[in-house]
Image (cartoon, rainbow over all chains, first blue to last red; front, side, top):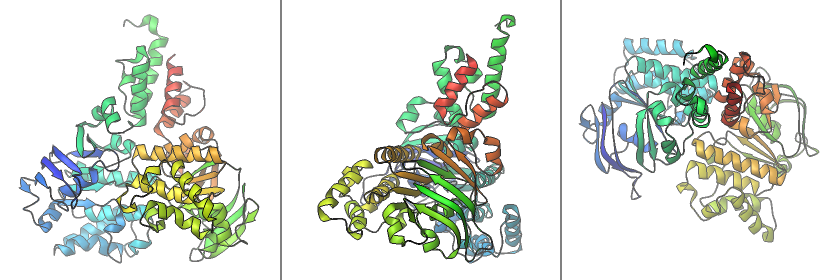
Length: 284
Length: 279
């Protein structure tokens, strides 16, 4: 479990970028942090993995303060994917990159080798390829795979889909969702509200270093006041649904006004049209 | 006007061409959005617009690219860059100064713009991007969105006929991304500048571009007004291009025979289509 207790943080002598932030992420949760550039999301991620320590308050990982944990202890608990994969890729072949974490922890044994092989197969990597010659999407997948392969209990992902095309984005997010389904806690920063709507179960919205909303994904993303304060747009289908609910008297309170996915919205509209066509027989 | 005729390009180290027999005309003042899956050849195609191919990357170049009568292959890169301004994907790599004003001045001085004109150009470029207040700020202290606007301002100060931007909003939040597209569209309209943007964010391209160009396997597979191109959401999906959800929703209604209007480019148009369905 990850707990932020009244955390404030700042870089060097500057004004605090995080002010009195508190939240708890239970094991196995899938949380997306959303908000504008500069809202404090990436700073929050750095506090989770201990790259940054709070100036006041506490960040607790399974009850232990990040101030008291050694970097190696934290690294074993929290896997971290940087926004830019080139900041963490450091080896000369894909295979070495995937083995790197095990080597650092002195665990490059046959089990590690087997996990690396499985990862190469799963993502269709060329084991001998030089990482920096791969395209951006594949480098991002490699950086993610090098974290997944370690099976940390918590992963922190700073914009895992930036710059990826639609298929690559799906591959990366499906891998993350599968990891979450096996029990890994996922905490990510994401600007793509469609990805947030598709994958996250919970959303924490931030503005100017503070949490302005924390709740189930669509409760937060359909709250007009929150959207305005955090300068967010809802996922498009939810946006259409909200507008129809607000602007058409007949839609309020019907499935059209609460649909969040394409399937839900298509069905809701088809049913609404069907029911209006048979309105005479409809007892309602 | 940009005229590309039968362009084929193969990188020297590549085994096959990455751009294949592309012919294309882009009228002045067009806001052209280019997208496609990773490896589709879209970036290489943009390198043809700004002369990076064949001038910087060696390879086999067939066909021609003519911008306002200037053949990019037979002209020097300096002459091409007077017509075509480029903003790289990694803007940090194109920033050379530490202060915003100096960054804008750099290109102007290199191009030998007369001193009495420089002041006006700097002010206009900063105003066009809405960052006049950042003029004396240190670039290192700016947010990603602000840096992106500085990068664009430093290029438009050179008053290019064509502006090429590679994923200008990749690292920006949704509000800043919309802000950059708003500014680009307004600039294109006010100055008659052709704006070419390569983007993965198809929702933004659909909303702001006059024309969408979809690239796959080094060829142009769709070109037209966004509503025309987006009507092909199934074919687009097959080549790894996802439509905005608002578009997919309306296309599903069209497929069910509930709606016969054009494809929706954005939430507003999808809301209008749904209202028609529900009426």
